[in-house]
Length: 450
Image (cartoon, rainbow, N blue to C red; front, side, top):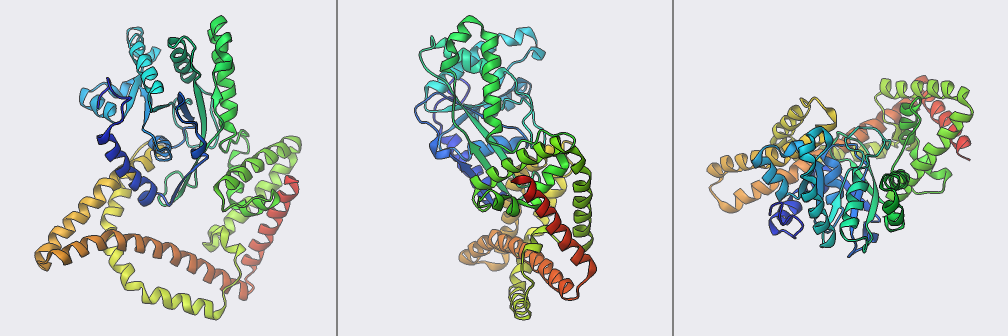
């Protein structure tokens, strides 16, 4: 697989894609969900246009919520070294040359545009990140015209006989850097370029501007877009702290991915409108939110625990016994997995651009963890001297690691509920104040939502 036949289906690429997909969808993240992925048109010329917040993870989110092999366009400077360029072509990435690369380099785009047509006319599709670069904010930044230029030029090469559909996509992460989080890719209705063909023939630049504006609005509808710079942090924190209450106002189910995104979109729109019309409400809201967050940190509690009923004595007892009985399995999984886990985190945290932390964690974990497990298995084989036992030991390493991680999360939740229940029974003034602030903030936001 190379640049000349990059649009062709590749067995080698598919093997890599499925391997990385398993690690991305199952091992690294808890859930990877493609909303409306099944409604994407088939046998059409399609370009995907996702927002760009989390480096490599954004591209993989699109790849792994699609059934077909996709071709990406990326900046040309990463193709300078031949071995790297060969690998990038193999994983279906084409370069795009910009003015900053030199006017001579721009001529190479002709070849790339021809390949774009080959991709669009085949069974593959293009993916272009129209923001141009990444930023860890829930906000769509100004789109570059490159995506529309590539789409219109592809249509022009075909004498405008075929439509080009651009699929807007919004990618949302429950956390940008932590593993075992949720990723949602929300695909929207296609933006058809066919209606702009007459305008493009008359005034190409005007057609680019109008089409890119439509795409921008279409992308905002698929993602969580917080346009208020002044109150960005406040809105961003409140949308997750009070998601169940917010969803309830709009009669949406926060457990459903589509409803979760929609509830947050409605919340952002309403609160931005309210703060714009009544700016004096921002300061008291900020003060209450800071007091609420401060108490959560002081008590080392998570927000969700306030929605749970205090545990009964028997509830505490049977949970404690369950953790005690399964403690040996946790300790085994913890001990045989702690070194590769900590090494992965340590190396990833050294990355200067924190937007790349998740990308490095993913790639490093894919190599470090299996290699460490293989090393342990080789060592164990010398002592076990039995193929079956050795294979069982190898299988136990990832399984016990997954169990240990789940045990750790459940134990933290148990500890949080236990502390909350004890403080509530003691009528600790801090927990009472925390509950009052939770109710006050929830009531205020609900009032603003209607």
